[in-house]
Image (cartoon, rainbow, N blue to C red; front, side):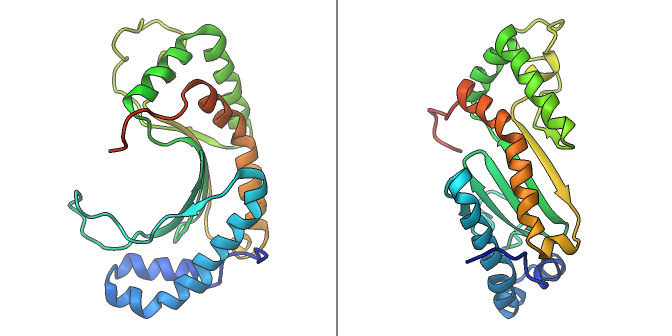
Length: 211
């Protein structure tokens, strides 16, 4: 199946879901989701697989067990392949890659690598190249310096990170419904690959169970 863009009803579907996040709306509009959102996302991921690996589409249902928000459905469709992520919703297309969440053992390895001059400076060069492509670097950070690190460390701001990723967004436009949306994902993921490689080399997977 060739990706030709997300369906014309994709954005309108999520606009409606944000206004009426109910089973009745979902049931009534399910065909739009399947045709204009899920099927194109499946085709997009199939074309990306040879270069970036197999991806999975997240379930559209929210986990409400530990949330005060009891709305049943996610207001976007997201998919992940390793460090790489893509999402479509009412606000358009979002493409990202990196470590959105790190367990405590990963954070410890991350900070050890950032504190090291060779590995830390290498990360900064990679981040500078990513930002030069118009990609925003983000991630959860501590409000203060992490314990045990010199407040005058040249990379103290990076050491405050508990997660680190790059992201780029496009508002709803004609390209979202065309093959050009694939080009946006590919170019962003390629630009972010040096960051994901650094994270794979110096942080790796967690030995701890996911919360």
